[in-house]
Image (cartoon, rainbow over all chains, first blue to last red; front, side, top):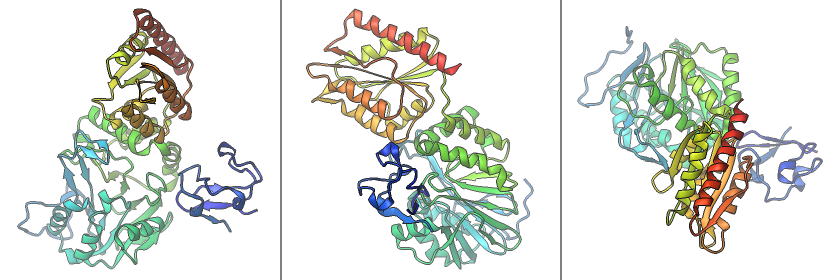
Length: 53
Length: 411
């Protein structure tokens, strides 16, 4: 599973860690996160994220 | 200060002239003496939009000003050098108080290159349709001939595009909004301004502009020594410039960002028929008796940015409001929406209020405090219609208990 970077603020979504504070369990692939989720750092939408190489 | 101009000052007919900052750098900004509302931030002492002209082999302008002040900025540049001599423009921050005049600056100077962060280039394109901006990032530098400008990305401090620039020849950090404050003052240097005013306005600025990114701010402050920059002047985009005791402004920024608990409390309230006001006063009496410094703010006369300034300076934040139409009083909703967005940390919270029949207001305030992560050792306190003497004594006692809890936190 790929990590994804928020293009706005630089936050990195790591699927291994998820985002438990906002209801995303560890092990959740970025693609499986609901579209209503937003960057926990800056609030940008999911469409602001790009896959990290 | 001894100046070694490499360009002779030109005689112009404008009343505006550039002000020397260092041997090769001039201030070409504008002071906005009478602005009192800066996108909802109450600027009681006005503000300034600092912009700079670097005279090197490549004549460079750093940042612009709010659009209405462009004639002033262009006149200041023209007092030193012909506008057409400008080779480079650096845009550290794309917010319109610094970029509003950028399209006119570019049109007037026809620069060879305009530099901004990668996000800055996109933001300037979105705002003004500006294309062809050269993106730069941390570690990049551009030679101006005798000196070099190096760039440091400061993403989210306080916008995604934010960056700072360092000019090696005169050891100046053009820090954009960082280390700034809203203050219009004719002394250009901080060491010529009253220290207490600088301290207050800097803390107000941090509270209202940077608080939500306090962790990033601390990381940046930690990283500065490792950047290997011999900084002797800090030139922010708002307020005075720093040439002496740079650790003072850096220290104010650090202590504000750390948000350590302190023995100070804010009691902010709205009131319709003075019931909540009475509660606020009784609570404050108890806090004062327990040795806590207290500030009481009626939201009718204290705007949200003044309230946020007090939130940032306080270890305890108490909010009280009546219930109106099954909601907390609207001014309280406004203040709490704003305060929550700025993510205050390490606070003790307390919610109180009055109501006639339904009483949602106090609970809504408590929920907002909960969302801010504030610890609430005392449950929400609400009275029906008007507090009795017994209610006021109870609240005074709660004030004492909260004061003791805060004092214990500060040890």
